[in-house]
Amino acid sequence: MPPFNHRLLLFRLVVSIGLLGLLATYLDLHLVLARLGGMEARWVALAVVISLSQVALSAWRWRFTAGRLGLRLPLVAAMREYAMGTFLNQVLPGGVAGDLGRAWRHGRTLVGGLEGQAWRAVLLERASGQIVMLSIAGASIAWLPRPFSADLRTVLVGVCLLLATVAAGLIAWAYSQRQVYDSVLRRTWVDARAGLLSRRALPAQLLSSTLIVTSYIAVYVIAARAVGVDTPASTLVPLVAPVLATMLIPATIAGWGVRETGAALLWGAAGLPVVDGVAISVAYGLLVLVSSLPGAVILMFEPGVSQDASSGRDRTPRRHRD
View 1 (spheres, rainbow, N blue to C red):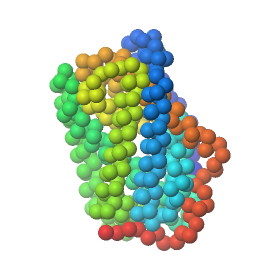
View 2 (cartoon, rainbow, N blue to C red):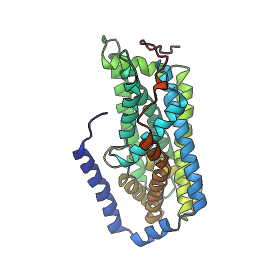
View 3 (cartoon, one colour):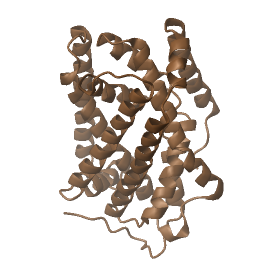
């Protein structure tokens, strides 16, 4: 497993606590806590059910991607690993430690130099979700509430265009390097075509990732209802994806702090009570954490991907091409 960086953990812990502390000095903390204390059990239960279904669908996406790269990964093993990874992402810095762990454990059971494919399967599977998340966040800007600051809307559009330009540039550069003999980029490009960009893989990736991102948004809306916020869905939903997109910034623990700060800024710009945005964001973080606890239970009894994940494997991966 990749070495644990204690300095990185400390830095991200300080950032999360610092941002939350800063918000606490400007908001009525007692009101936020009162909202959290009044969370309705029926909404909490619904959020947990959706989150567990989300893990199952994410595990299917991982298995599908690995299969396109020629790696055998049973669905039960994928679900077990994804549950553990989701929990680790919630309690370790950066939000990717769990993904690194499942890639390492999957690769550890493989022979014949297939560890690279195992790592790239996780990379591509996560990239599929992040591309869809950022796309939905960018599209949401057009449907932001009317009172939303025109200047901030312009800034958000500029940020989206900048990110899209950088992404396009990276893809173009990787494409230009695809013929370099046995380079990491070449292998990544070949795997990306097989697992993500081919005519058979792309529809499955887009559909599964869209469903997964939709489940994130649904849990966020449920968090709003759980804390008693009755903002109309037509006003609330366009704000959710941009808030969740802030969690992709790898500077905190599981998005804590940066997510709440993003909610405060967006709710304020939309003319909505800032305390509502922060309370919803905190409730969302707690719901996701509670939903990840089955992974903690599995982690206590399951050392890693079972050997059936690699049984019957070949030493040469059979990538799907079309």
